[in-house]
Length: 392
Ligand SMILES: *Cc1c(COP(=O)(O)O)cnc(C)c1O
Image (cartoon, rainbow, N blue to C red; front, side, top):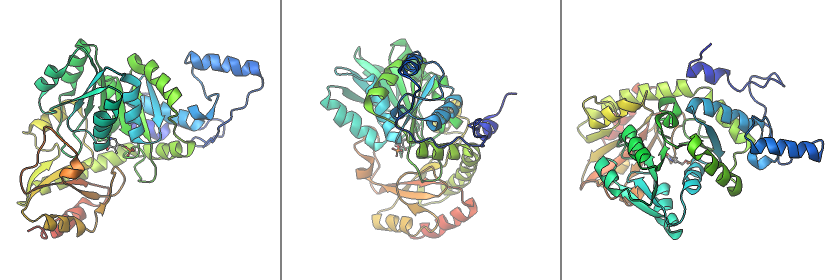
């Protein structure tokens, strides 16, 4: 029977040997073999990518991580999924697997701040040149492609600024020029968008966010196309990336309710966004809910849903009153990350945004990021309403 994603996520990962509804947590460094011959035969199978239920050494993972990989491979509709210890580990695994000295990497000028640092500073030291393109202008991307361009790295929507790009067009431009493509898909996850199916080679997700969903574990996933599989497999093997069995288990536990949580995040974020849009002190709501907007159209073209993370721009000459607005929220925590069950608020000034070439806040504008959690949205609105009064 063909299963919907929701049903699949409930039924996957049963442990047939122990008869438990969930996979066992298998912690292992050494894997024991009956003989040298058995070990060599197993290694041969590993090299040939034969389906396996255990590795030859714990750095590659264990039965628990294999179960998580199976679930993710199906969800992502990918050739293979690699696991890393953090979402940012998946960013570095993707980039380091593909880029070599002399290459150029075209990066959307709206990526996660640490990705900005990695590409512009760290890669530069290895003679890999980062070129920023305007996420709102495909022509800018096109004209920056050279014979050295190896990878186009996209984050969609943009970090904190939430601009949506025409993903299909980026893929066709890249394919014509034989350039690899990567997408940081943490905002939507493969539940709302399947990057590999769309044509990307590398699909990055911080499993710290919605996959685990409970703010108690860090992990990253990198789904890949067949085209880049060998490159990533090789770098993964020699770099020491690994996810522990305990953390993999926590991600599997989160995946059980991914559909339910994301549907609820989407519903509540829409309710809150529509209310925020009507508030005079808020001049912009950065979330795809207004059907006439360009971002909405680009979102609708590719995504089957939207998550709980949005931005608002507030205009005020009094910055400390904007900070007071955030501090006085009772139901929104103040802290990094998002994608857990709880609502969060964060102030993003020029420093937090890093150096952007194509985005500027106007004078007296303040960018605030809200994660709409699984609380009652009516209560979240009451909290926001009360705190907005602080803004002068
Ligand atoms: C959080 C985040 C990451 C990094 O994930 P960690 O698990 O915190 O390392 C990467 N990309 C995006 C878009 C993120 O939001």
